[in-house]
Image (cartoon, rainbow, N blue to C red):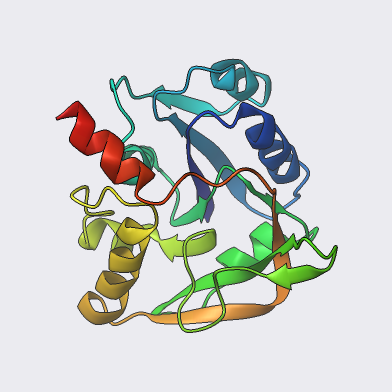
Length: 206
């Protein structure tokens, strides 16, 4: 088995460095590759990717209109049996995180819980574990990802493309989402983009 870790990134080289370090610290009993798609960043993302020996792609776009297109570039480059979808701000925390995420039953896709630190200093779960897992840290068989066509690039708002991808995997391919109960990842806190940020930039550019 081979795993393809796919990360789309935009101007978060400082966080991406920590994410890639967490991946390279894993020792899974299978081959893996890391694919990073730079969605037009202006920071030193390319240098970070070179240091960690990732497969690298750069999308030249005069504006940022959501990560769907960048994710699809990474999915198309993937050669692994399983695609491990990761964010550029979510580190692997458990030593066996990659192995556990990729060890899935037939007709399922699998995700790990992700936590982050709150303003009160306590760790809490984010975004996933309520109904179906978002693609912060999610493994999907490549054949099913290709069957649904990856992300719908008409979505420009952040996370909308992932919500629809989940819908397609469940209702179009009959996959059952499964959550690993332990926390396998940790979100790196950073400033949030304003509401409708991606959509606004897309409209302004058009």
